[in-house]
Image 1 (cartoon, rainbow over the protein chains, first blue to last red):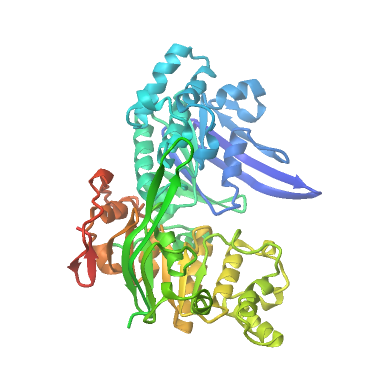
Image 2: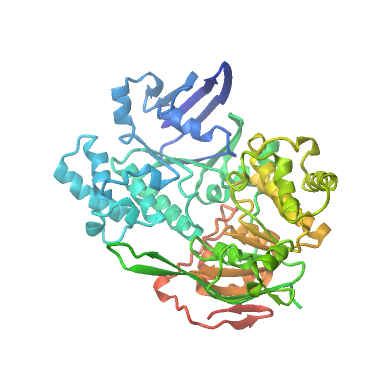
Length: 263
Length: 292
């Protein structure tokens, strides 16, 4: 079976003042439909750049210099920008870390969710209906009233739920979540992860989960890929990586995690 | 005699109160009491808005508390005059969370570490320089890098500069406010290791403010859990983490992701509306108290 997303030999460089930095170096990874792949690494490892490269959202001077991104039988790197626009949000959506900066502060949250639908050709009346359903899906209480709220009227956890509602609006088969719970308190993080898990199963979503937190990986991922300095150092099933990592760097990273003492 | 005693500390902030809205009072710290013994690594944990940082700052009078007492070596710190307080700060120092914004970017690393010595008029210029070198080596920095600017150091190294600055005056107590939260995990582990080594070598006492319970479990011998300005539970780390008694502590602990994918997950939800502010602490175990 061909995987849903098949990234091959992806290389991204940033060229500035004559020096070239290779942010992603010959990265190959795949995600099956319905699967959660955890992409772990420390800052500067290239994990976020990978996400942006897949969606072709890299800002210059960053650019893809080699490789392919096969998704649903097409190489995304070869699509027209107009085709790419229907992929973004329609087939692959992105959840960012900071819901406050990712949402438009001057727009009601309901309108922001509806926009994600109408941008992909859904009529206004239907979009309004679906918006309320979506807020309900992400367990925002009293969605009929909440659609009229502005982002600043919501708590951090609620904002992240709105972000997830936007990401799920068009029922994409793949969601890329870049540190989706890093800015949240631990009790809110647990709620959001639990909800993501449930929505994933309900809609058979594949998830590329980018995080630095092995705890989040243990809770969510089926498989794990570990990145360092732009390169993939190890990948495998979550239990194998957490229990018997073969790579030295993975081992060091895991031993640095202050796990709760077993009780 | 305990090194530090915080008694009935209160700090309220009012916010809003503009043209359209009446002022709302935020009870950031609401009748907080605890005791820190010499050599303790005392963890103050809570989520955002719990009042843990405000409590830390009130201890050093970086924020003036509204009410209560802070007793350091038997002396009431809040009664101190400005000049007496300055003297007291030699003994009580703070390490901040963000090594990017807490160091002056236009000062050289050596000058940053030397500054407290100049302010307190300690030593001759040569003596101060020697002390700065000694401090650099103490925190694992290269004394050859004294003339560099903060931007030339990595995040972990910058936090070491912040620690060296805090140690310059030989303090007895360090309030470490999320000292490793901004760092990558492998760097976190190194900085934590350094803090623990320094504690043993210099006989330091820490108030360690953190949101990461895994970290607290790892490094603190005693811990107080804060929620909305209140300490809801306090005790030896082992006892408190083994037998969490307050419903909020239970919910908090159950929310921490486990490293084992097969660990049983029993999430406990805390109903915020059930929280009663005025429940007194009672002993629920050996040196273990909870507001239940």
